[in-house]
Length: 429
Ligand SMILES: O=C(O)C1=C[C@@H](OP(=O)(O)O)[C@@H](O)[C@H](O)C1
Ligand SMILES: C=C(OP(=O)(O)O)C(=O)O
Image (cartoon, rainbow, N blue to C red):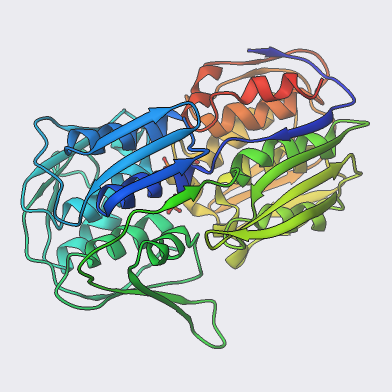
């Protein structure tokens, strides 16, 4: 994809359904009784991988234009797969499904692409093993492919060293199959879609917050049955983030992004935009299926640097590539800290962000848990996405304000979370 600088992005758009929520609808619908009806499901490669895996586990899933129907078979209705479960590029599919598979009476294997098979899985192997699960890394390197055989699960309390919704959700899902209560404490609250949605499906889930600390504990007790639901997936704030950034930094722009999920555990980017001097307003705020939703109005603004650290990080972790792009054209210096988790995403995102910003003539220094960026003028460059969808999209936004042309290599990788990304742009020209 070749891009150059533009001005005046104007219009009303909507972004595809939330990736985290789309995954969870399929998973919870598959182990619920009755049919789960999903509207605005994200047709990205990651969520399609989740559908493929549950079909391999014997679930009948119908899919047409705006509707996905999951014909759930109950908590114990999955059947043994006749093949290895192909999780593609998706960390969420791998880690959440492992929690479900650990509680089954059959064995299974999960494997993904090269990037996925190099991401850390010890973070789920350890707590699942404490619960009595039999799960191992086939190559003994702490990564997928994973091999899971039947085990008798018991409830545990787990103190997670990382604020990770994938780790928390994996343990809670295994907790559905345990013999008692299971709880997970995380250093600060990560996205809570699992807790909100499992409650809607009828599970006994609770969250408590330690007074005087950022720690949060989610707990679940085993239940007899989950019940199929009708769900409309809100627009993905992680996808809206690219248009929030474009609206702020492309001169003479005014964009409304409709139906965006603004769950506080996901909406850290809104606070950062505000802290940087961005003109953003929330319109039509409402709650659907336990999730907060709004339309977002964004106008071109003069941005300045800020510091992003601490417990806001899990609420914007996937948005850091595009936040870094905003910082690269803001006045002054932006410091991003406490974000070492970036190193274990689809790529080492500290490295991929910094290398590509440097290629665009930005003054950026990587650190062990983030980066320091001093804003200025960007120059067009060839962007090495290393097949990381968020790098492709973030640097497509950088291209819109850079001098000269920018080439996004392997831009097709946007299919992982936002196949229609470049079409949405056309609507704003
Ligand atoms: O639970 C989820 O849906 C996700 C959790 C986050 O990962 P971690 O739990 O590894 O932080 C996020 O980066 C990922 O895109 C989706
Ligand atoms: C990290 C991401 O996803 P996952 O962990 O599900 O691969 C992402 O979408 O940025």
